[in-house]
Structure formats: C-alpha cells, structure tokens
Image (cartoon, rainbow, N blue to C red; front, side):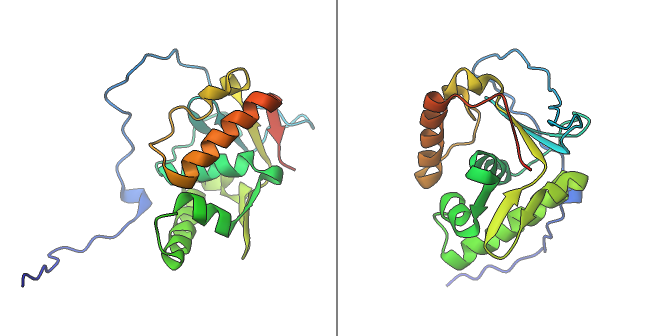
Length: 188
C-alpha cells in the first residue's frame, strides 16, 4: 500500500493569488461594450451594479470593474440578481451550485464562497447580505444590457454548467424571452 505524505502546506489567501488571466483563445470576436454606471431613481449611483449581458460584470459606484475570480461566486450573484426580491435561500443556492456535494460540504462551500465574494467586493461587500436562512442583495442595480433584446445572450460566457445550474440558466433565458425585463432593476 502506498502512502502519500504532503510535503508542503498550502493556505488560501485571496490577496496572495495571482490576478485572473483572460482566456487566450476566443472563439468569436466581440466588440467591447463600454461599462456604464446605472443611476438610481433618487438620482444617486448604486453602490454595486451587476451587468447581466453576454458577459458578467460587477461595477462599483464609480463604474470601475470589480475583479471576481470565482466562477460560482459570479453565478451566485447572477442568481440573486434574477431572484424575486434579489433573495434566495441558502438551501436553494447550495442545491443549484454545489449539487454534487454532500449537504454539509455544500453548505460549507457556500459559506466560503460568500466570504470570498464579500472580500473581493471590498466596500461594496455590504450589498451582499445574509442571515441564517437567506442570502440577498441590497442597494444593487442590475443592467440587463444586450440580453434585454436577445435573451439567448444572457450569461452566454458562463462557465460550463450542468445539472440544476444549467436548468436554471435555461429557465431564465425562456423567462427573459417572454417577459422582456426593463433595462435596469433596482434593489431597495
């Protein structure tokens, strides 16, 4: 019987990770869309704006992109932004994002993802709220971009999905095709 003994210990510290590199191979060329800050109805800027077009983007109040390296973290923000009241139960998110994991491990992964998202969002992390049962977004604007006109573009560049996550994405594209969302949605 062979025993494997770890020779090095690894710690995960988001500040020590290298910045995410863009993919080196693009299948089709896209004309870059300028990022824009969405105004709130009261005249101010939302502290956090999520763009849910073909490419996902999170912007601070000044319109500067926020780098989010976790794929599941970006998906979780998109799922919250599309939810009624921008609120989902922890169990719903665990079942959709960590459906292959055991329940306890899935909830642990959800807590870690939530912690990493808040850290990556920096000052805008206060927009991502949670309690024992639910996770929700506050003071967040959603810009549907080009997916408003063509729902097949909604999260087109999402990572490879499967199971309940892909089912959710398919349902949202159908819903967007029939409802035609307004260009901007605000959380109170």
